[in-house]
Length: 69
Image 1 (cartoon, rainbow, N blue to C red):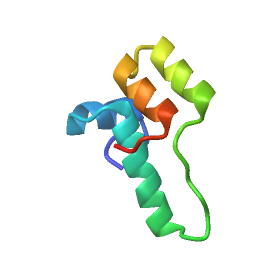
Image 2: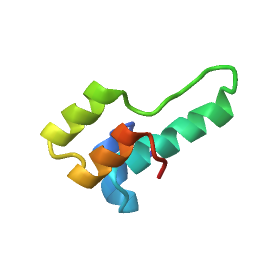
Image 3: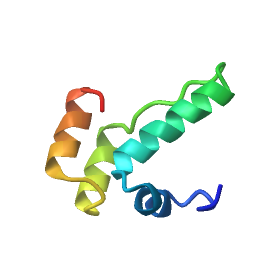
Image 4: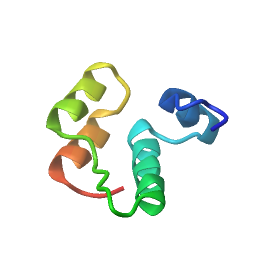
């Protein structure tokens, strides 16, 4: 709430990676709205985050392989 939905600010405030913040937000939304499904980024989102240097090559490989945090 403090960061007004800006994931990059949440990332900095909590010293967590972008995909970790996204995952935690997905978990929170899943707990608040259990009837809806919130998933990890798809292939193109992962590649886009990698291109923008929001995630490392290792993080991208982990997300693309389907391994968890």
